[in-house]
Amino acid sequence: MQYTSSELDGMLKQPGPLQFIGADLSGADLNMADLKLANLSGAKLIKTDLRGADLGGANLFKADLSGSNMGGADLRATNLRGAILQKANLYRASLDDAILYGTDMRGADMRETSMHTIYIRHDGPDRVDMRDAIYNKNTAWFDIGKMLFPTSETRIC
Image 1 (cartoon, helix red, strand yellow):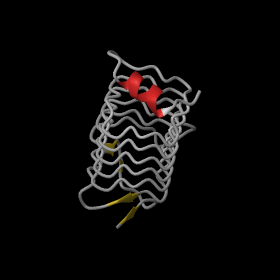
Image 2: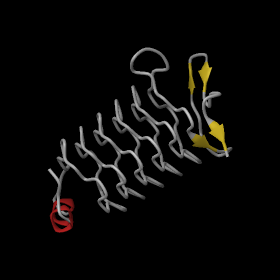
Image 3: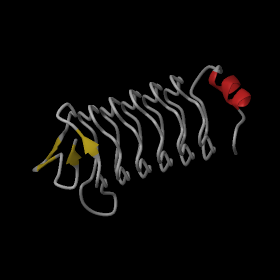
């Protein structure tokens, strides 16, 4: 289901965690939106403006966020399992404590992104794909066992 701007505005003013399961929010302006604990499982958020949005604790299981602008967004403790973040802008976003099993982050801009204590798999079908991801010296990386990111498949700019 796709929402109009006025419908979205009304829903964003409602108290409590929002339910957008399977919703099509592609291209929506959710800049600075309070989506804390929202259920966006399976939602389409392609090229959506989520700059500075609070998505802390949200469920983005298998959501498509391709090309979305999430610069400065709070994604702490967010479930991004199986999500698509291809070419998404995560500049200065916080992914601390996020679940990234099977997340497709190919070509994502992760410069100065905080990723402390994130939960990922680096092998098997649920591995995180960070090929061509962009980062810089201020990107906070994580250590999982013997594998320290960034890898040779990511690049610094």
